[in-house]
Each structure stands twice: as C-alpha cells, then as structure tokens.
Amino acid sequence: MLRNHTIRPLLNVGYATAGVVTSRNVYKDFISAVGNTPLIELRHASRETGRTILGKCEFLNPGGSVKDRAAVWMLRDAEEKGLLVRGQPGTVIEATAGNTGIGLALAANSMGYRCIIVIPDTQTEEKKAAIRQAGAKLIEVPAVPYRNPNNYVRVCSRMVENLRQQGHHVFFGQQFDNTANKKAHVYSTGPEIWEQTGGAVDSFCCAMGTGGTLSGVAEYLKSKNESIHIGLTDPKGAMLYRWFSEGRLAASGSSITEGIGQARVTGNMVGLKPDSVHEVDDSEALSCLWNLLNEEGLSLGLSSGINVAGAMRMARMRPAGSVIVTILCDTAQRYERKMFDEEYLISQGLPPRPVPVQNIEESDLSSALQEAFASDVEVKTALAEYEKAVPEELMNGRPLP
Image (cartoon, rainbow, N blue to C red; front, side, top):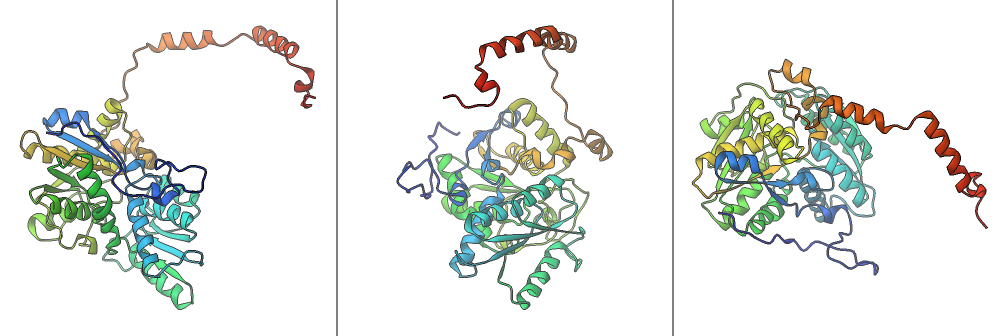
C-alpha cells in the first residue's frame, strides 16, 4: 500500500543565478523546467479496482506533454555529440504525430535552433496549430502505413539527406530509433516515479508510440526491483499487442487515438519484455476520460484514456494493496474537435461525453441572468455619475499634473 510520502524534486536541475533570484524553485529556462511532474491518485479508477492507481501528470510539462522529455534529451544528446552547437546556426528536423514536434519546436527555440516538422495530415488541427505557433515550419504529408515508401517518417528521412547534400547543417531527431528518447525516461521519469512513491510502486503500464516511455521507465524500475510488473496498453489497430503476446506483427480493429499504436518494433523497444499486454478499445478509453473529466476535473487526451483503461485492467490482475502508475500524456485541448464532436463520435460508434446535470434549473438561471442586467436608464444614470466623479483630465486622456 502507498503510504504518505513527501514528494520532492529528485533531479538536480539548474536554477536562476543571475543575482536577482537564487531560489531552487525558479528554473532558468524551458529545458530545466521539463520533468518533475506530480503524481495524482485517480480516484474513480482506484475505487473501481480496489487498487491504488496513480497518474503521472506529464501534461504539466512546459510544452504540454510527455514528449517534452524526449525532445530535450534528443537535443542535449545531439549537442554532446557535436551534431548541434549552441550559438551556431542549426536546424532540427523531425517526423512526428504532433507532441514531439511541439516539444522540439519549443526546446529548439530555447536553445537557439530552428525547427522543421513533418506530420501526417490526419493529425488534429489543434496540434498542427501548436507547432506553427511555436514558430516551426510545418510540412503535412498524406498518412500512409510505414511499409509505404511515402510514410511520413521515410519521406522526412529522405528530405534530410537531400538537404545535407545541398550543404545544409541539419539534425534529424529520429525519435523512433534514437535511444536518447528512451534515456529520457531511464534517467528522469523512472527515477521520479520511484522517488515519488517511496519505492512502493509495484506496477507500471502505458501505451507505446516510439516506445521510449515504457521501455525507459521499465528499465529503471526493474533495476530497482525486478518484481515490478510492466504492462503494455495498446489501442485497437496497433500491432504490438500481438507482437508481444503471439510473436507476430498483426493488427485487428482501428482507433481514433493519435501518436500511439505502432506497426513495427522501433529502436527504443529493443530489449523490452512486458509482463502483460492489454488491448484497449476506444469506447473503454473514452469512458475513462469522461469519468476523469466529470468527476475528477482532469481534462486529458485520447492516449491517456488508453493508459488509464489499461491500468484498470492490469490493476484487477494485481494483488490487493498494489500501486499502479501510468502516464497522463497530454490534455483534451489537443483533440477538441475530435473528442467533443458528438456527431463524429456517434459516427464512429463511440460514446460522446455525458454532460453533467447542473444543480440549478435552466429557467432559474435564465431569469437570474436577465435580472442581473441594468436597464438602459440605469446605465445612462451610472455613466453620468461616473463622469462627474472622475477628473476631467482623466476623461479626456490628459495626464494629471
């Protein structure tokens, strides 16, 4: 069972030293603010399963998602290898379903680099807008499977080579096979979870896109306690569920989720051996999300729904007193037009959000609002009295002596 445990920052992050503020609670830049996200108990999931289920609030990273970690570690690794040099022109290029692109664009700004993102055109407009707002160049390409030569990752790879042949200095993030992605979770997310639970965590699960989060957290937690149970939660239509359960890459069904559900074994997944695998359908995930929003005030994205539903499945397998941790990746705001479009969800056979019933009748609210407005006569009188009370100099925009 999880006992009361004081959560404190684990990592020795940098802090402001300019002589004005020296508190360790003040981070010096975007990069140092990534990580050390809180754990929160998920009440509904814990109550339903009789186990303690905790969510790691990765949506509180400065770029808004768990992918900020991979972005920062990949850029730091590139600098350590001399592939990027502070103070010198450099362009970061990445193929991404969205969140890594947002994190990379913001981190690149903080470190003095420019950024180009290649994204499948099927990703949400909200994520595309966030990348553009961060100042990155966004290139949309048709969404096709990885086996197709025109898959966005493969197009991006060839584009990078063409730019290098033209003499441009570019760094290709390659988040799927760049193991700096995994190291971000070996050296930050995993240690944070262990520290925050006081070593009480005995189970961890999440979905996989690049595989960095699950593989990295699993590696660290297993190094602390080999008996910690690691679970993969895969959406319908992804192939890894059958890869780990049956040894073959095969998919069944489909999902409206984005950024998770992989059709190949990436470099970041090498060596991962989950103790259990769970295939979660979208209806189950959305039901979890609606409960989290309506009952706990957590407005989370689609992949978080898969993670929480998977954590509940895994919790029911675990002994009483178990502490299960999962990842709350990002917020619902990045999927607003998809998650809150009732007509779209119904067309996909999915449950729309049940709107909470208000405690006040609509008729009472309407009459109270109507009576709250002042009449035209009352407005005219109030404005006239205000003009008398306020000095003429201020009314006419002249400064007071």
